[in-house]
Image (tube, rainbow, N blue to C red):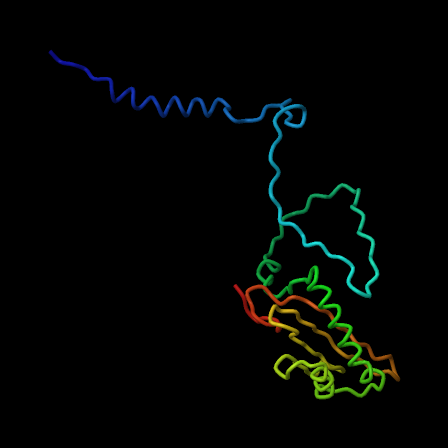
Length: 199
């Protein structure tokens, strides 16, 4: 007597039954289902928080920008990857106490360079001497000729807090200017100098 076994057929049917259940729409949202209307709430997607900034000593509080009421227009995805490929060259912004530290250093740098600016007699060595006179070691200060002016970079500390800027122009012709900004270094790079390569 020959016995016909159907075990192979039954085992093969289990995946087919599961596929049929999933294909029937298990887990899909149908029109009219609204979790906000008495249904279970969905958990929000976690987004990184932006550090809170506060007025620093000597700084007047600025009003927070009002959110735009205009409907955002759809944007096309970028066709090139310039921003993505050059993100390593974008410095970190300072926030909180480090922002206040950066603003204080910018004020000290501007004050130290003011005599050079008003005389209009500055060169990389005179700017370097003024910045080293603030108490920074020679290794923390870089100065260089920048067109008709002098550029500088100061690494305030190892965290890092960096101050970069320039003295430009002639006070008798068009007015000399002192530019200085503080930032927190660069991604994937130690120090304050802008990296020349990344990944």
